[in-house]
Amino acid sequence: MEPNTGTGPGTGPNRRGVSVVQLICRAYGLSDASEITLEHIHRYVAERRRVEERTHHLRERFRPSIPRPRASDDAA
Image 1 (cartoon, rainbow, N blue to C red):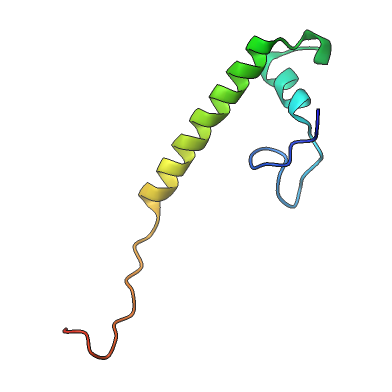
Image 2 (cartoon, rainbow, N blue to C red; image 1 turned 120 degrees about the vertical axis):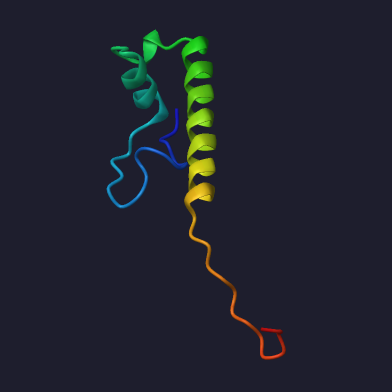
């Protein structure tokens, strides 16, 4: 499999080139890629989606409200 190039663990300035296979093995305590089943892959993808949705919801919820600058013709 290809290295993980999306968002999530392993991205940013400290990226170590962790592949999706390695992430799945770590997540489920597997010794190597030969132990990965289709169920592991589906479960991993579903869990990542839930985490991303929750993170997105929290980011939107706690985003500071910055008022837009008033135009000169706006009523006070």
